[in-house]
Image (cartoon, rainbow, N blue to C red; front, side, top):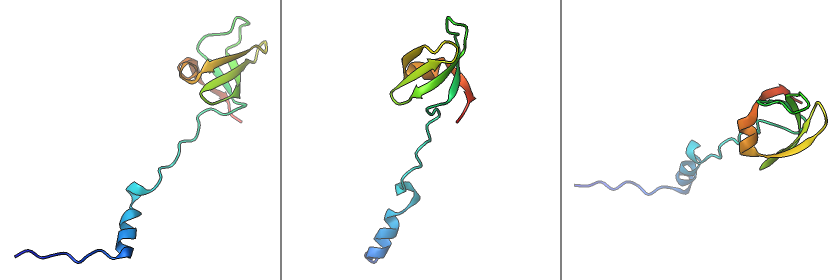
Length: 89
């Protein structure tokens, strides 16, 4: 003989929908922000290793802290070439 379970009430269904799996995951904060100073693996021809971030997104706009030269790098290339953050705002 099989027993039938009682049908779910609307409150039980609502509770089932709010399980931790359905909760929105926390969005990771961006690692780099505008104004941060980063150190790169290779030095610029002026001799400086440090760059200021002017723009973030799919590409990064960087300004050399030694001579002021501005470049654009793709995010993937920037993350590969950067050694880490020197100064964080």
